[in-house]
Length: 208
Image 1: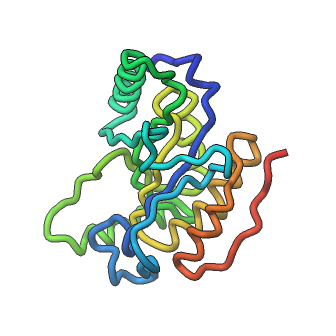
Image 2: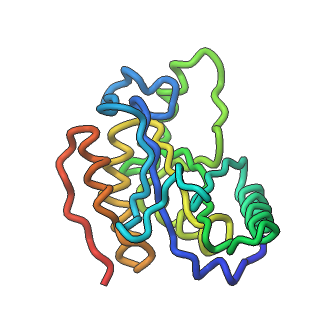
């Protein structure tokens, strides 16, 4: 996979799409899950008030893509940027996020076990809708950082397969790891995402 040097300077973004009790079709009613309060919710967890991604903006400042592997995502991003140039727009004015299904836990085998239990409730095997990561919060952070560094995408939209545990692990483990390395700064939107599940707000580590 080739490295896009111009891309590396693009800010890393981490968004999340919260729906129901999670994106896995068997999440509703599964042990430890509960549904979101209110409507489905997409939010950039690493935005600030002066640089907020908005799926409804026109012209768009963010594009979501889905891909079966990293190379397909990289090729789709390159296509989008080429189209922006052809339309006379600065390709750096649009953030390309790849959807990433996620199930994380303190230990990778616990995450794999939870996924197996969810899958066992289905009548037929389930295929991921896009990229997928099953493992630990730190492992997820490393993957997200690599996705940006390799020019695959400007960041990800996390699709938690179960809620609210994945959201908690994302806030408590993944975002702090990225912040400590100066890759992101968590936004106030993190608190609103937690409120959607009546979760206590967290003290987050700020990048120095």
